[in-house]
Length: 227
Ligand code: NI
Image (tube, rainbow, N blue to C red):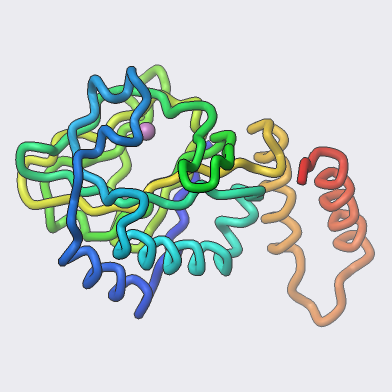
């Protein structure tokens, strides 16, 4: 399932990211690509140790840590330190590929299994032509191009691409989540259950049925979660 999270980054945090990106020093994006992906990747990225990238990463991780919808959809166990990219000019596209199953963060040698991938859009669709994230589904593919501050979360096993940007530039943050619940089907069941419980609540006191459903949610999570 593909989740759109509309308020992943808002207000001052989004504006601060925009102003930091205006003076960023971009490098070739192939540094973090696997060998298959490197053949089709043609964009720019901030190096992992770039000071601007480090400040941006802190802002994004801070925002995600307080985003309830991101938490319930991803059930994150760990998030690979987010990266930032730019598509435009002659480096404007990323062809069909699948993300590596395990990412190793070079400075810490920490491994992150990639259960979910995300793209957080950092500028608005009117600022560029093209640049859709296309997630293959065996049919037409799901085409995603969101306003600044919105995030799309999708299974990392999906073949996906970024269409060529033919005007302007597309700025985004992207990364991967290792979920406490590895299996997509189980994670989606928990997501549906959690949303239903949230919608059923509302009074000052929860009904016995809501208490029982909440108990089911936590007992399933207890059964399935790896932490
Ligand atoms: Ni990818």
